[in-house]
Amino acid sequence: MSDQRWDAALKAAREAAEAAAGIIRHYWQRGVDVEIKSDATPVTVADREAEQAIRAVLGPALPGAAIYGEEFGLDGDRDGLLWLVDPLDGTKSFVRRTPFFSTQIALMHRGELVLGVSSAPIYGETMWASAGGGTWFNGERVQVAQTADMAQASISTGNVKTLTGDARWQALGAMIRDSNRIRGYGDFCHYHLLARGGLDLVIESDVNILDIAALAVIVREAGGVFTDLEGGALTLDTSSVLAGTPAIHAQALKRFSLSPSGRGLG
Image (tube, rainbow, N blue to C red):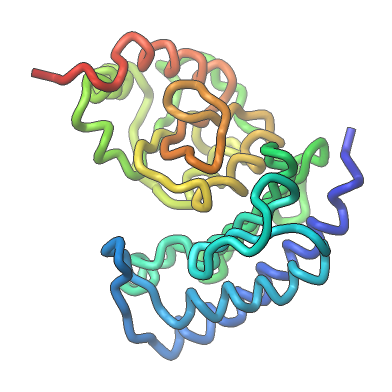
């Protein structure tokens, strides 16, 4: 059953994503200068202005909720109602003129993710979901595939640098050999595909909670399973993803658990 407590918040999140989309489209057409942050990642005026626009919508919509954003940090107490915002996830793609970037907005309530909006304005897709309310794409409710056999599974990998350095890399290789096909859609794109039945498993070892919080709600409400690579629940410190149809997720988790991180390949 849909939890109607979050209807107004979801409406605000969708409006905030639209406000950000207008700014992102503007700078996509105009072009931007790029700065490098202290963590060696790029940032642009589009990132900053989009987050400001999002905050301007979310703040009044849910008074008392804290906001944790990629560009302007935490405003408020992270332990209650907490908005998680990445105004332009995929800045490297934005700068290189490829459309694989998005705005990610999620709401966490006492540590549980309750809604998410994923908007990719140049790619041309927006998906959203809320607890008990299902996942929506192009005005229709969507579901993950029914795939249960690894031999029929389509797998997509994203950021996997850390994974290459431990024994799980071999487990991934075996899984790829046993699967139907491997792709690397990355960013928001493979989670959107998973949620609407176009993929069966997504694997990433190097992410930030702001990258994936909204996408986790979207995949779960579409009937999928979304954990970290160890099968753990998502927290503000989560840095990896294993997301898939229930059966394929369970099989992948078992394979990775037999080749845990920390046991080198040598």
